Each structure stands twice: as C-alpha cells, then as structure tokens.
Length: 354
Image 1: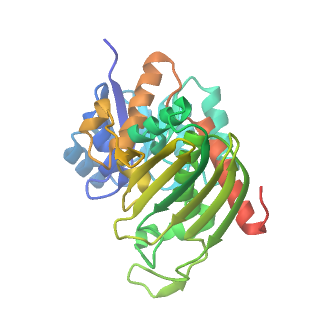
Image 2: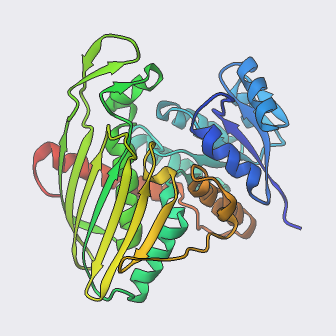
C-alpha cells in the first residue's frame, strides 16, 4: 500500500485566502494525502485553522511545522518575499515542497532555491497550476496529434479583478516591484507558461506594458500613484511556426474572462473560462471548431473550481514522490519561466524584441 503523504500548509487561514480555497480542499479530497499540520503567524489563528480544516497539529511558527517529523510535504502559501527563507529551511529539513508562484522575488533567489532543491533528495513543485488543468492537457495532446494540422496563430486574453483601481491593504505589497509579485510576474507568468506548455518556445518576443489605473486607493487610505504595470501585451513567433499574441489585463472584475484560441490549417481549438483571481484559479472549457468537448478530469472531477488545478499539482507531486517521476512543475521549470518573464519585462522597458 502506498504511504499517505502528510502535508503541512504554511499560511492556511481559517477565515480567507488562497490556501483555504484551494490547497486545503485539494489535500482533503485527494486520495493519498493527509492534512497533518497548519502554521500561521500566531498560535491562536493556527489553532483556529486546525480546527476548521481538521489538521492534526497547529503551529504559530513555520519553523515548528517544518521540524515536525509527521510532516512529509511542506506547502508554502505565503507572500513571495517570504518564500526563499521558508523553502530553504524546508529543504534543509529534508521535506518535499510545494511553493506558490512566483517562486522567488528575482532570478537570483529562484536560482538559489533551484540549486538547493537539486542538491537534496526531495521533490519540489511550484504553483504553476494552469499547466495541470485537464482541458489544457487535452489541447496540448490535440495540437501534438495534428488535430488542427499546422498551427498558424494563437491569441490569448486573460483578465483578473486584481490590480484594479482599489486594492486591499493586505495586498499593498503587490504594488512594489521589488517584492517580485506583480501583475506581470503573477498573471503574465501564468499566461506565458500556458502557451509555452501548449505551443512550445517563444521567439522574437516584443512586449508593451502600461498603467491603466495610474491612481489607486489602498484600503481606506488616501489615493496614491501606481508604479507597476497593470496591463501587458506580448507578441512573438512560435519556434514551431506561427504567431502569438497575448493580452493580460488587471482590474477587470466583471466575470474576469479568459480565452485562448489556437488556429490551425484544419480547424480551431479554444479554451474558455476565467476567475476573479485569474484563469489559473478556475476550470477551463474546451471546444474544437466551436463544438464543446467533454473532458475526463479523473480524480480532479470532484474538486471545486478554485481547487481543481492546484489539486492537479498535488496529485502529480504525490505520484512523483511515490514513483520517482517528474511530472509536477518543478523548481527548474520555475527558473525557466522566471527568465522568460524577465525577457518580457526587458522588452517592455527597452522597446526592443528579445
């Protein structure tokens, strides 16, 4: 019988947050996983989370969770500036890791974590959950099989309610580019990763970033100037042939739609969906030549929309640990994407293709 993987989640709040909506649900519902522990910044909130989620242990210190011998896998679900320290400590403790995307604040931090993970006998996944979406997997297979023949072009539109004219005080750190968690790195990163998975490498990248909400209100405070882009346009060639265009828009709360069209000589594939937090946090629907396609989601079928893609990463990581495979998006993949995002930002800043 396969050993149950005991998961400890750092940053699981009983009241709100991405960990509650996705990570906790995924761990609770997937076979072979068990929620062993939760950690927050205070013992009282950790106790509340453990009671709400049925975790066996609660810690007011992330170090205590990492040291717990009954935790096999540490999930890091806190702000990006805290990723490096927690990930390195978990690696040193010999724990497997699931860390949210972006992995680090910059390339140097990301590469440091990759090197540490590679030197240890652990499996380390990053939260690029869109590439585990069942409908996206079907698109990849159809493109590879030649179902629409040669790809001529692709266009992606991705929107999110985040990075609009008003943000919560707790999200104010997202307005500082040095923290590594911006509209371009988060939502742009997920969009770039998806097309890279489906269509291969991008070449001759040309990008434009703009600030569409130059004045924002943080919580109930007075308004302030926005210094980071909240809108991204990318165009490029596909290394395998064809052209690509991407638009990633912040501050679009009404439905926050998403659509990806892949046009080939023999037809068109389309992914539709969207979610307030961005397309990577919800289900996607597939159509072939405007005809809806049924998707076999397997064990992910029982997941709510907010948890289906994160559960896909956990399931792949669970199987990687048991079988020695490498199907979950790992840290090496994270550094490749971080470099691609840097190329996009460089093009936007210089006006030159990369």
